[in-house]
Length: 160
Image (tube, rainbow, N blue to C red; front, side, top):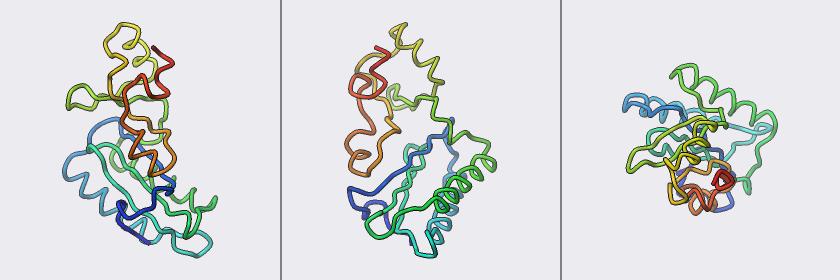
């Protein structure tokens, strides 16, 4: 069952899929439609999952699940991964590769392989104040407070 992402409780489980490039306006509309259709039929053991999503900065697909009403199961998680893999194929993007870092450079969102990002830190091309996206957050509350944070306050700080 699709719900507005804003209506999900703070404890809702979230998954963040970052694209290696920005989506075009047309792609954003299509991804919104496809994600809406997927979440409308997403179930666990035949029971509807109360889920919502947000497409942030034209490159992050954030899916949230209210686990108080029904938790995801192995099969429902598999279905969501299959859905994301289909998006990857259709739009020729990487959404599941967690070994990359997205960060802000002014209003622009940059995307680098982790090894290149480490080098940027070493070369002082980014600083402790650079805003990074912590895609390891697990709940909506963490997403709202700890997703966009200075490098020094994220797990990326180990590179400083």
